[in-house]
Length: 441
Ligand code: HEC
Ligand code: HEC
Ligand code: HEC
Ligand code: HEC
Ligand code: HEC
Image (cartoon, rainbow, N blue to C red; front, top):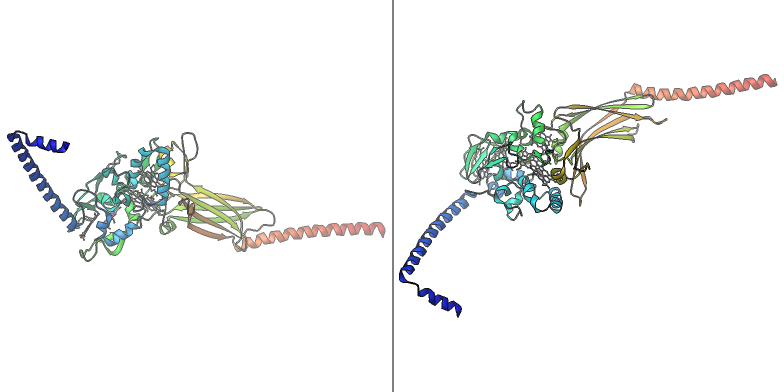
């Protein structure tokens, strides 16, 4: 009843007002249909091209033409930067202890499109893609003076890349020298926290090493050219341009790790001591070894082995950056390092191309004969608690035996000892016999 009354009342409004209302209605209708038309045509355009004109597109869209690159990227830690169980667990703990305010902060690197979409609850699929194609290829500048907001992006129809002569029906292809330089990666691979502690310093470690001078950038090692693999599917375009590896292999890959370091071992035995010297060289890692989140460790271990290859004894040396919180306690979890580290207790990681000499001294228990020494380098990083806990990869190994002459000599000297003791016993017995003989005979 009430509603009808109101409806009746509206009809009573003066005729000129009514006329104005009709005009406004028509105007609104006209404007909205124009808008609708534009929207429809642009979205059908977008559907035809597959990628958005104005916002970030999902990676599967790029994957329709860049099939091989998409496949490689899907297996990368970049594509797993949100789904990675190690990150997930750490992120949950961080939220638990620090509240909602840190969501945006962690995601600014692990799901960088959220910087612009504000989707910090990861509702959209694109936010769960981690570091995706369109984010990296929308970057046109990086401002390292402004570490909280270093990326200048232009999402939409322009894709920035390393080639000057690329042309695509799906998007504008614009040359970007930045994409071939370390500064591109530095926006994320360098993190100074609120206490001024450099938690992640991969970029500055590279910058301070010998590689910038040789014009060897992050991309040269982590994104090598894949010969014979064109950047785009042949059905789309017969391209002359080769793709680069988009797996971004690093500490999670044995291939890279087994080339990173070399070992040279010296071994000698002096009296009751075994002396071992190991030279560890960071041969092919472009930054410190290890780099990245300081939960990673590289462990040098030296084992004395007997002639059957059985371990007699072992010593270790650990290379890592150790961070402390304000109370002076050692931090062991990534999020705590990022949020709470207030000082660096120690950092003995090996710089690029640096060779470290380590000396080990073993006391040899009597009767123990070392035959060889095995030195090895292991890379250790955490895996989710529910599976293994810690993961280790062997980076390098070397077994060095004592020179044959030396082994003979050790043997010789021990036989000599037995001989001398026997001689001594014989002498005593002989003298005793002589004394007895003199007294009684
Ligand atoms: C319809 C197919 C198609 C789609 C979809 C597509 N591309 Fe391309 N893209 C191409 C072609 C073709 C080239 C140029 C190849 C050539 O010139 O040899 C290219 C070139 C590029 C280049 C090189 C640019 C340069 O100047 O170095 C980048 C980067 C790129 N695409 C990124 C993307 C990203 C990111 C997406 C998704 C948002 C995407 N593309 C979607 C077909 C496509
Ligand atoms: C938008 C931020 C961002 C940019 C830009 C970026 N990365 Fe990453 N990168 C990350 C994050 C976050 C991870 C860790 C993901 C994880 O483990 O959860 C990562 C992981 C990696 C790894 C794997 C490490 C491992 O443990 O195996 C390598 C290698 C790597 N990045 C190299 C690069 C290189 C080279 C560039 C520049 C071409 C680059 N990244 C650009 C954020 C970024
Ligand atoms: C972490 C940032 C990052 C991500 C994520 C990323 N790229 Fe790239 N991409 C680069 C960089 C840097 C280069 C230039 C490498 C070089 O030449 O030194 C490149 C090069 C390219 C090129 C030129 C050809 C080539 O392979 O060098 C294409 C095409 C391309 N990317 C497409 C894609 C597509 C498609 C995806 C997603 C499936 C993707 N990229 C994901 C950083 C990224
Ligand atoms: C000369 C080759 C080379 C250059 C240049 C180089 N890296 Fe590496 N990088 C390696 C090797 C080898 C490893 C594996 C051993 C290690 O962890 O140091 C690695 C490991 C990594 C890891 C994994 C670390 C971890 O703890 O799992 C990341 C991330 C990374 N590099 C990023 C970068 C970035 C960013 C740059 C540029 C600022 C860069 N790299 C420059 C060779 C290189
Ligand atoms: C400035 C960018 C940046 C921010 C902010 C950031 N991270 Fe990361 N994070 C990285 C990069 C880059 C790596 C890869 C380091 C490597 O492997 O060398 C990484 C690696 C990690 C890892 C190790 C993943 C693995 O598989 O070993 C964890 C866990 C992590 N981050 C948690 C967090 C949490 C939690 C936050 C928020 C408190 C956060 N990160 C904020 C850039 C960032």
